[in-house]
Length: 426
Ligand SMILES: [Zn+2]
Image (tube, rainbow, N blue to C red; front, side):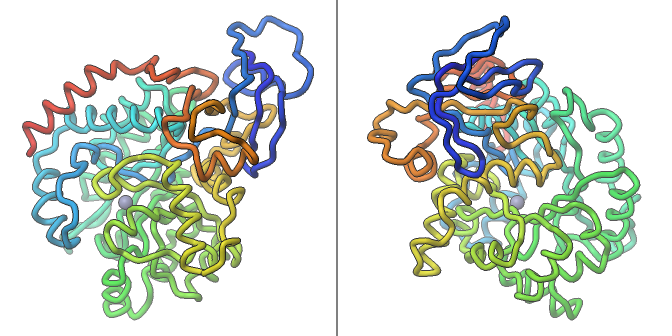
């Protein structure tokens, strides 16, 4: 594929105007002013388009699109116990597959090329990822409320073993399986210790929820005499590459310690606002040197999977709480939504537009009303663009979405089947 005369915005917000980008064998192989010689197959006129790196949704639960809008403006406990848990009790692999397909379709149309997920029936999620062409780090959520059981006794353990065997690095590496202890408050230190040992043995990365609510944070210090972050560290979890979602209630000492352990925070500002969990101190974390990626969390608590919205919210929120309009500038937010997410997933040759990197990118339409005029491409991408600005989404050099059409997903069937599943569940 050859895209000519296109404006390329890097993950760090650097702009190259009117360059030619050639993609071969799923990777960027030439980026420059010269049109490279050779037969590149499809040729796309890029004038009028902006190329950005594919967006990486660093924290979600994709099948929960099935519960989108089912219980809003409710207290967290009531929402969980009266709405979410009863539906989850009835879920089957079939429901999870169609809910995943719906969420993936939504993400592809929003320019997301990779996501990190934590849920169950993960083989059904993996199937949807393989068929749709997107990338994902998939974690089977691990929780335990039975004191007689160890990690090895749990269904999550056997499902994880099977997942590693069947799906780890499958689809040309598009799927990576992660270990995913749900959180401190849904596990125990010995379970966390066993998960850490398991992850070390299988060379897995870890996804976990951390200090999302004040209640969680206070109850943990009451229970263990230390913060949830310390519990994770003392159980060996932070010895692995970790993505910790939320991190709203971290202490200054937690931030310092997590920088030492190189933990990536998956900041989910819209979910935190909607569930009234609080506001993560992103500027403080960033200035301490912490790695920060961006996530939507699930469609049940957001209520969409739109990373353009998430970028905008992250930037506005950081400015609003610090009373500093210079806080979290557009270039930092774009990096969080792209390269930082790819690195958190262990995808070192992804998340930016560079020669040799995997060709995960999005083409935005410069002529859409929300993109005109264009005094600053970076500003338009972070503060003005939305899903409607996305013209094309490409993963590993393969076009998944173009001009409103899905090339790998039968969207009418997905919508039909999702409605069928929901009618059986709710
Ligand atoms: Zn979550």
